[in-house]
Image 1: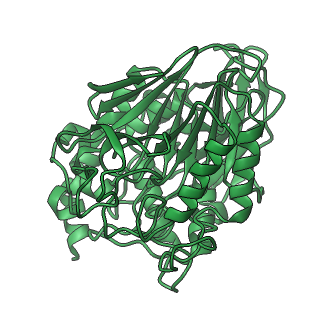
Image 2: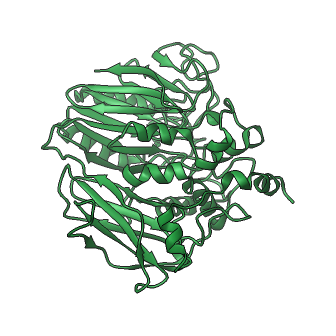
Length: 477
């Protein structure tokens, strides 16, 4: 028996979660569950994506997976919590080809409006029953100046969280038995803050933890199943819509680019991310970089850092790009066209840092993609792009740094304590800023997980929180 399976069986009592009464009642008449809950994504002022997955149970099996179940599902939605005057999408099959995931796009919605929705699911259409009620609020749109509050998180390492040092945990081991049953404490803390939406900026799962390496499609899917079934995550995404970007660990492996034939291959990683998360309508081949005009005051940009990059080992210079020429020009064009007061770039990887000297896969790294970053910062200054801020994931510590050009960057850190570490200071000879050109106003004094909350209204407030919801740092503009 391998080490991963042996320790999983010891943890089974911690992982069992009984589904809410509604789901348990439904299971008496049909053997299908919503073991990963129901969620919304890519909400705009007039559209939204809804997603659920049909499962054979509401808890992990003896192999630590949550197998899918064949059946059908659709979605009901209404502006009324009692679903009066509800509309319904067409039924779709939940089939193995798409990992038993059902996704639908809603259009024609009203801005700044709360919608209630639920999955209607079963083995067949005649036996389908309604699942738990969920909700999302559409974006205000560029015409409405109401304040908006959202949260950014990154780097949820499942095996470090559950298995500690056996999973190569780098930070303090704070997860209790209850946490290992319910999921990451950050999601309970974030829900209490009642954000308008959440942005997951990369490393949502880890394919390459030494405790178990995922390479095949079934193994990759299992990583998503085990993560999404946590009760705290299900409860959070019932009422908080999300936007997603990928990084290296939920693409292929640590620091991965598009070279080498080591599995998973690049196209497999791209397809898996598009399959598992509601960031594109079914059948869409649109690129995953995009921008959303949230309100009159706020516009956000989410970049794609893996699909179009040059090889990491390529010497840095004008021809080397993390974004690719098309995405870079799109970013410049849309930034220049924006009249939003606050312009926030949410990047899976840092652009300012500092980072470790040995790293070569991001814009902050000396042997990485520094030329593209410096050219972009110069362009921002030349074109007078004001009130521009970067929020990044990837780094497992929280910080607030200022580039010599004046561009500010906030790192959200890792969502769980076990995946955290101390950062790299400006001037550190083992870092990417040995000359101390970067000015750092805050960095985590001790290793801790957590997240970043942003409130955008007449002023912009950015706050770091730890994984239990304690505010650690506040910056305002």
